[in-house]
Length: 330
Image (tube, rainbow, N blue to C red; front, side, top):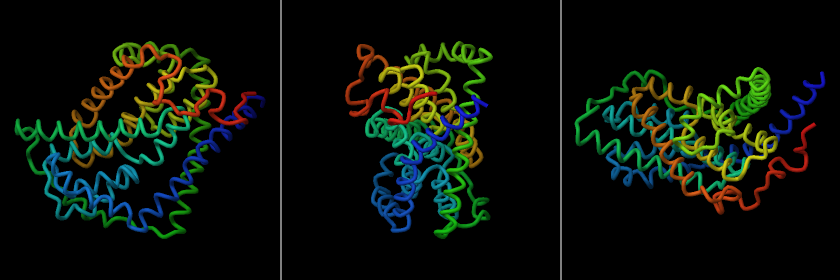
């Protein structure tokens, strides 16, 4: 009973930390969609996306993902499916761009709460998306690899882009937040269990070779692994928890959050875009290799800044203030 009471207190504290970040941004994004701001921004950059070797519609799909998320991008793709002409290589590049940079208002707000700069990590994701997307389209165009047209006819049977009313949005948001609470509680139990049975040490050992290459400190392996597999929201919540328990340095938190910003939710999001026709080597293997390279460069640049990576951390960041005055563990 003591453990359950403590678990409930920890889960409730982390849940409210996330809700204070998530709910205002979710409302703002919803208003932006309904007032046409997201579409206006997307249409403005559509011509520029042609510089990457992608059709103009790809710009609207990508910007929708930047503000709304992967599912928003899929909804936009469904709307363009009847007329979109795109090769497998181009679509794979677009899918990788979506995976690198999506739902930035929500996810990078969580990253900031966990201890890294909103703008530094958001810029990292957008820069990686543009660089990787341009490189993939250029390589495919020069080599002729994955040049076959991608058929999206089957998507037209899925219906148009959903236009849920306010009550439907309110209900789905409440359900999403409720599920978030239970997932946070489950992940806290999972971490405690893994530590109790000694699996945490084994996870760290398995991750150690990759961590040595990327420069990510080994103590951040368990929570980073959870985020990499399941998503940045939950990984960020656990970093908030673990940073206080283990007194992670600002450098450690920044590198872990940089990794999570670039590559997370490898299971769900990757499978979704694979099912739509993206190439696994481009959207999974290549994305992970680029993430490792970027984090390795960041780790080398911050090698002499173990205490404070400067402007890359939150200006007001402090381990003791991650969760406010109510963050004391029982």
